[in-house]
Amino acid sequence: MGQIPLELISNIISMVILIMLFVKYYQYKKKLDVLKGLNELKEKKKLSQEDKSFISSNLKDYQILLARDEQRIKLAYPVFILIAGILLAFFEFKEAMIHLNVIVVAFIFMQVNKIHNRNFVNLLTELNK
Image 1 (tube, rainbow, N blue to C red):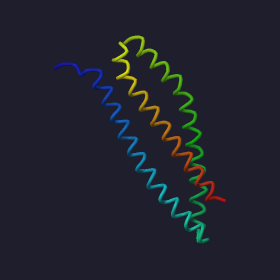
Image 2: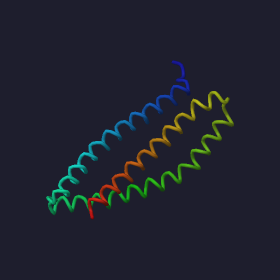
Image 3: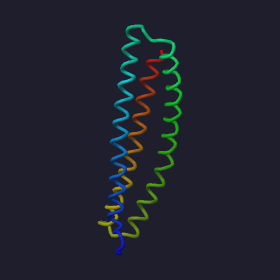
Image 4: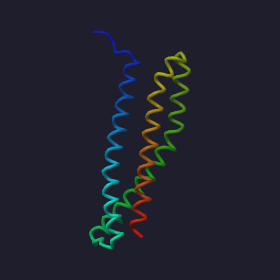
């Protein structure tokens, strides 16, 4: 049985990350719909105590998640740069670009996750007022 080409592994990893990105977006839209519903209740002044508790609890959770995302990204920058340098040093430019695809997609995933969490923090902060 032959070995699986490294390019195929890189492409599969990129595809998995892209699928995770789409799943994350779908979950984001569902959560956003919930927050829109809470906003409508707030405008009608019909928020229950349970809704208010849900808002403040989720606000704290998303603030923690946002802080963690920011820390992960700060840590990932040098790691991604190191990996990119290693790839460029040990592979031909054409091959290195194929593998760098994984780094780019992972970076995009991390940024999108941070943006989603920041949006939730902003929305929940407005609802919490």
